[in-house]
Length: 180
Image 1 (cartoon, one colour):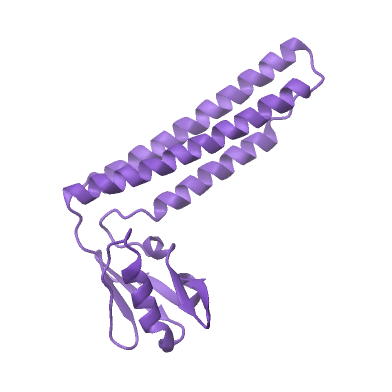
Image 2 (cartoon, one colour):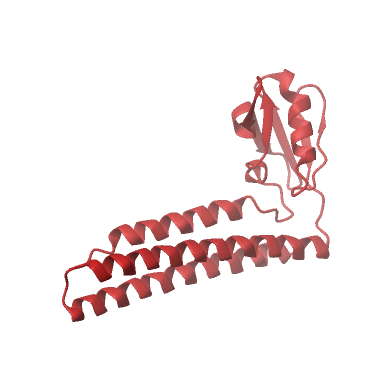
């Protein structure tokens, strides 16, 4: 019998990565994961924002970034401002960095959906790659033709299932982005 469990795990990892990437996509509402891709220069090296500060939501359209070391505030503000994919303009009062989340225009919403659709394609490519690896392993496996056909059908069903999950996640996120 051909074991498809390791391929299923790989596909689950691809789906989990896809979900993580979607969390970073702006929807018009404040969410701490929006800033998860921001890197800040602190202590002579580049670090993820969550390692130098705590990010919380303050109302539906405001993020509050509280640095662990107040000396890093200017670098945090500059890093958030310079990330053009976010389009945010933070301000600080010497203790915290406030990041207002401006309302999205219709054009910007469509741009964001287009960006998110790239994650869909990347994830589907990863899943197809896992399917191809499984097929290669299946060809070299010493199984009867019937067993190989059953295993191949199982792998194809698994691939289809994960592609449908990715599409469903994307549809949900697209609806969330386009809702005003």
